[in-house]
Image (tube, rainbow, N blue to C red; front, side, top):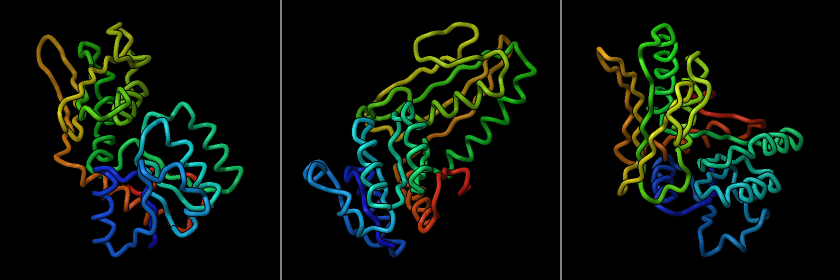
Length: 235
């Protein structure tokens, strides 16, 4: 499969290694040096594009792939306030979008555990729930997209929580403590605390390989398809 890499930093290079091991070809690399000169026509060499850039550039990258009619796997987070607009454009133009707040297989299994635990804890209001997420100092969005997904799962299942916040500790709010430290790939902890005991679940990434592998698997999945997909479709 011919792949275009949009974003050639640490994640892009990790994706490249895994894609080559899986017998794919990288036909285009977009980075800081050429991002302003790459056009939709350049993407036509690719069968799928994998995008890991920044919240400030992701929308333009998606639209270039739509213009080239190339399926795009989006790993960037922090842009979901524009998701409805992008979704409408994809459906109207019969384009292909794969999106996820986290491409790690382990994290997506963790999502399922989180939903199940929140459903159980809905019956026990003595337990106060909170969340902590830790990422490297280069990550621009706070909280992480993964933390937002986890929080929204909890809110859906836990009647006593109506929203989430990185600032407020109001009774009906799920507080998310967001930390940026060193080169931490990503750690997410959900804690249920009571006067008697604590219950915690945690996912801790050791490196970027899980995210990179998941994005390549997503690209393999989405090749030749039309529509909007996410990791639920793969897992």
